[in-house]
Image 1 (cartoon, rainbow, N blue to C red):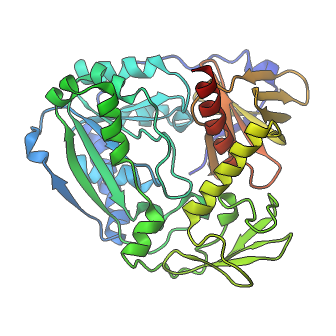
Image 2: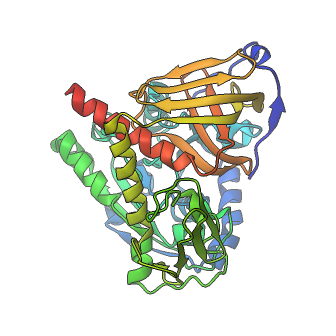
Length: 422
């Protein structure tokens, strides 16, 4: 999937009209049916099947909040298969509306800004639920998983459920990540996909349980490890590109601890600094081909990188200084490429400046608990996105394999500063 891009200087972007808020629209049955039909091709290839648990407790015309883990684009096709013909609004990132706003509105999509405070989205959800009597499909992780484990959830989720006051259903997929992991540049593997649809919380549960209890229930449902599931279920992935671009996640060598020198091709990942080389086996394990295996599990390696970032922050030495191309989202006509710039991230947050000095944007480390960062964003490149309610800035770094570390750093900084404040 691509996005419409237009080159324009930042001073002229400022003159462009911002997109106007529109109330959610009831999803059009024609578009929903078309989505359902178009989904069949991919789902048939994956031998898709699903099971329901407790779904007899909710009527076909009752609206509900549907929570779903987020692995790849097939998630939307799975939801269409399971939920059709029930009308539901989909919470999705605002850049998904660029160049196709009418289509997205007719599908019932509601735009939001990832990982930023968005009270408008909450009001839109309430309107869709109370006025349109629609169900709501929400991906609480707000982004595809990087390493196949759950992405951190917001701590205010229990409070949100108290406000919404409708039953909660969980759709959990198996195989969707293994079929199309984000790091692999949209190279699809032959993997069966399934899902479990579970009635999770009734109105009475939400009313009677504390916010903390609700958060605990939701977090438990979002506790998963796709690579571990692959290993336990003996799922073989034999494609010879299965390790391509794995360096996006495993950017730091566990032997020499050099960053940005990992190279992943075919079935191996190698450090260009010290020469250590790991093979990603068909069953999802890592094996060192020329020495000691420090990590045989991708999420364990990734978590070690998180701890390294945390240590840098606590030692006061963490900083990223990146040259990047800058794109701006002001409206849904296109994203505007305003030129090149510099993105700095440290304990004080982000500072983004354009080379022409027309743009200077600061973002506090407490602005968000996580970061909208992505691999191969709309086939343009890896991206770090920051911004506020006025504009979003998409930074495509020139340096190799930095967006994962940026997300880890944002999350660890937020936790450290909050803990210190308390």
